[in-house]
Length: 294
Image 1 (cartoon, rainbow, N blue to C red):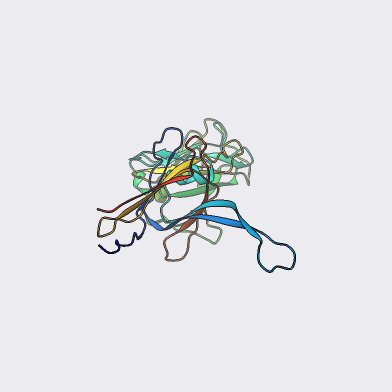
Image 2 (image 1 turned 45 degrees about the vertical axis):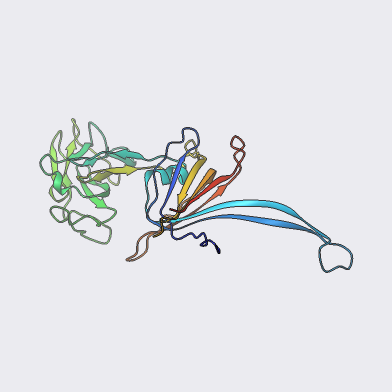
């Protein structure tokens, strides 16, 4: 009869974390560079006297570690490894402009004597550009606008920086009582307060813009009340071989903290995350491994 063909593992297909409570998947990672699960054990030798060799050796602890290297950043990645589930937004046919928030001083965003709001200009939403913006009071009735990046300036009508300070406008914008001041190249409207405009020179306020989109997300990481890193289960599937051979590893109890968010010139971002794999008392196991040959 002879020997059977060796059992082999080739490639990686997917990694799918799931809730330990409900069993429902968080999602899946398929843009994987590598996935490894190490069960590293130690032995404890008994040394003594003049012997250069142990008198006895017993088993020590086994440490389980899962290492994932991937190039996709789904919402659950932030939830599991950074402790906060993102806010997911559906498609925005007219984009989105966040609330204007005072940053330095309190006079710029003011319903009566400052700028009451910043909104997308009706019928000009195609000029909205992704980014974070700062308004700065030049005189009691005028402001300049700054952008933190020009990454989306070519969307719609082009915008440009006027100087190295990242100012966009050539001349300050005048704010009038209940009046609409248009920033044409950005698709924005500044609406003045209902009273006599009188802002304090030097005050600033910030806002954020999302252009017309099919979906978006945002997440605030690091708040003390939100820093909860849930335990999760995880199913790792190897690539299906040409002969139909497949491996599945179901790690019942995993926990990881932290994920790098790298960016390099002309390269896809890769994140390498490590998670501990440990004993599940209810299942009396650490993991289950399955293999099939077709």
